[in-house]
Image (cartoon, rainbow, N blue to C red):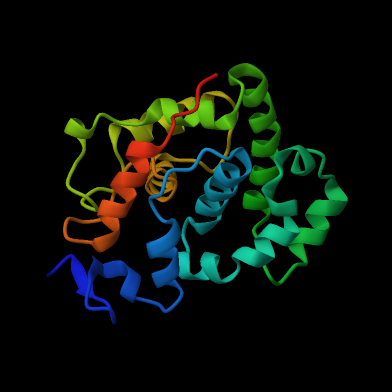
Length: 203
């Protein structure tokens, strides 16, 4: 089966972005472009955790609700969430009402604060796991990698929850730690240009 599909503009794109109408903009504008903003990184990692066992379409459709419910993923605010906030979120039909995942986001917000104190930013920590391009598998041929295993393992050591190797890999794809757009996809070249211009965060 082909790994690409032809868009209405006649250009080829990753086949998966044709599976739902809302996927196209996400694919063209966001997926794979490098990110260094801490709140954006925390959002992406949290939503990938919520997606575990569900479809990405479900999460994407609810993303604005998630943003409002979790104060736009400002982890300094989320870290102060109380039992009252958990109860509020469990009643919020606009998000995924999974107690374990909700509590994990709150826990991870507190761990993110610790990482910022330790490394200067969440971005500085995450970008250490950028793999060598020569060691990458063919785009979209894997669901985990040595780097996603290492990232998940190190986050777990630091007390993070609901961040396994598969979730970590999906996060790496989404936030541009790797360019996983398939060969022939018109956006792959755009992402590659963005990655070349991107300044990797340092402590």
